[in-house]
Image (tube, rainbow, N blue to C red; front, side):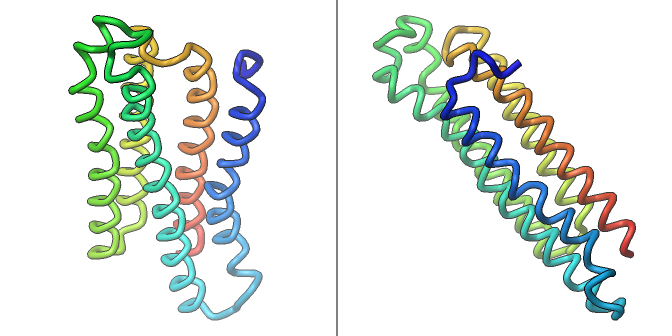
Length: 172
């Protein structure tokens, strides 16, 4: 599936999954590190916040990809031609929506400390970015190999968020 993806993009993308999987693995290790249930719970909440923060950074990056693609297409005047030019304002507007949504998700988590809710909302933002990327790729506004990469990375990120929900529930 990743054979069409340029080597650097493949390696960097896959390396970007490491911070997604570190928090749930650390949560699962907590009971072995301390017998204090209060400490396990407190560190669990911190690790959920760590994962949400990284996910927010990635969601922001995924939105910004489209701002960058518009710029690379010289505002739609380059390779994307008339289609790129017509879509440029909407694509630039979309590019900031994921970062705002991810930020609001972080604020909600900070206020409520409801980890599963923050993780589920961040998963929804990752899915929204994927759907938008499929739309853009289908219109030739992003390279076709990008969808191959996004499928694998989105599946990995979503799996890590689900693992964190399960790990946090297991230590509660």
